[in-house]
Amino acid sequence: MSLDRRKFLGSSVVTGAGVALVGGAPAAEAAAREPGGHGHGCRERYAFTVMGTTDLHGNVFNWDYATDAEFDDAAHNDVGLAKISTLVNEVRREKGRQHTLLIDAGDTIQGTQLAYYYAKVDPITDPDGPVHPMARAMNAIGYDAAALGNHEFNYGIPVLRKFEESCDFPLLGANAVDARSLRPAFRPYVLKRLRSPRGRVVTVAVLGLTNPGIAIWDKAHVQGKLAFPGLVEQAAKWVPKLRSMGADVVFVAAHSGMSGTSSYGDQLPYVENAAALMAEQVPGIDAVLVGHAHVEVPERRVRNERSGREVVLSEPLKWGQRLTLFDVVVEWRRGRWEVGSVGSRVMNANAVAEDARITGLLRAEHRKVVAYVNRVIGRSKAEMTAAEAPVRDTPLLDFIAWVQAEVVRKALAGSAYASLPVVSQASCFSRTARVPEGDVTIRSMAALYPFDNTLEARVLTGAQLRAYLEFSARYYVRTPAGGGPVDPSKVTNADGVPDYNYDVVRGVSYEVDIAKPAGQRIGKLMFGGKPLDDAARFVLAVNNYRASGGGNFPHVAAAEQVWSASDEIRNLMIGWVQGTGEIDPAQFASVDWMLTRDGVPVF
Image (cartoon, rainbow, N blue to C red):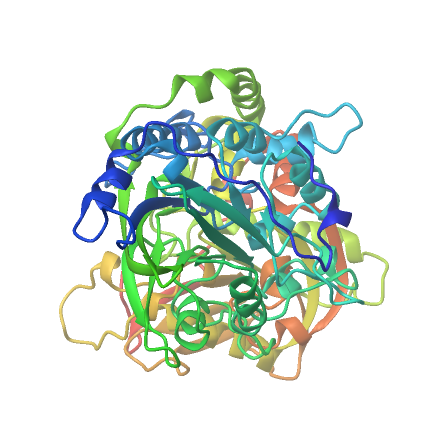
């Protein structure tokens, strides 16, 4: 069933009347038998469950395409929709399918090589292209709705629209609006109808909200086409409408974390992680399925400032590792339903087997992608790993930065900027990434650079480059000298800064003094063997996420752009290996930065 966009632009949309009760469900019957729930004119109570996932990021199978093995981590988590399907089936058997809904909070079609393959290698947008594996799996499981995530826009609007057409459920984004008319460009909400054991209809509204940061992070795809106003502002607009349309219960699927922070600073007037703010400030919301932050929050309760009522928020862990269950009880009072209670919890996907129906449905696609990522593209003269990349200058990050700088130098040859020195940033995206000695495959590059970032060139002064490095160095926990050896596992990620928001820069040399306060840590900053000239100009080879303001690094978003590429950095690396045939760390590896405490090397 495809979705006709014309049916919901600026209109009231109701999707899917519920199925009448057949035989009853244990939870619903138990609620109906509680005191006051039996007999003519007595109060009826009805229980139902809304299940939720988020940040699936292209995971269908419990498989790690980077290691070519079943997924595993230190906590022995499992991933994928095939596991989620088993959990969903269990809940539906227990509750009765007609007393459940299943929703998602976004970031669905980007993140694994399976997702990349069907966006770029065998794209779903081709005239005879395949159906996206995530759509096939989610259709088979029976999703009722999904919010748009920011990564839905990574491959451009045509890929997203094709995915949308393939889904048997609506993609919701009340705050994804046409840039000119400001009318919704996607369905804002869906109304689902459930039936109590006594035949009364309960109308459940699901409002979908996505992240305002899309306007920055995917500017190349959405500028002039779509706009993304704030979650709080748009919830305040839509929730009263849903209540006026007869919604008895209001859920929000929000691709926005709970912290109230933004990674893009003041570049937008809207908060990136606004789910809890929305719950506090907008009355009429009963529960929020939270996404985007990649953290597990089984249940958080927030009191609304205006109504005084508690709102329940839950975020299941990413990639299909957890399934949230919102258990809702409504009571029939004075001719209408009122919410009696809401609670939430999560189920762990590692406790169940994969659903063979889902794995069988997509086995051929999975095998095709496995063959693709195992394609040999060259050889490496030595093993390179990212295990120590957050605390040491490692050849692996040097490799990323080297390739980026080489690409930019060639692109600028003969231009007015050819005489400027090129420096290059790199981040550790995965501490488990490695390039083996011997054969190098596509999956080695995918593990090293899992994001679909593209490359840009921006002009910075020496002073701006120094500020950039100072901002990056806030990543380290302040550690005074004289306190004994430093534990590498405890010195990083200060104030929750993730690894991907710590940049090293190749082309200059410097020290990071972790004994000093953030903002005063960069020392011995040199270029060409001499102290860096604050007035000098440099070309920074930088990924588009950082260049557009991701991570809120200073100066780069406003800096002059002198070149950009449409191909992913990962593919530039693959092309470099294929072109040279060999990775030789001696060609690019050097120690250009180190951690110190009061000038004494830490390691």
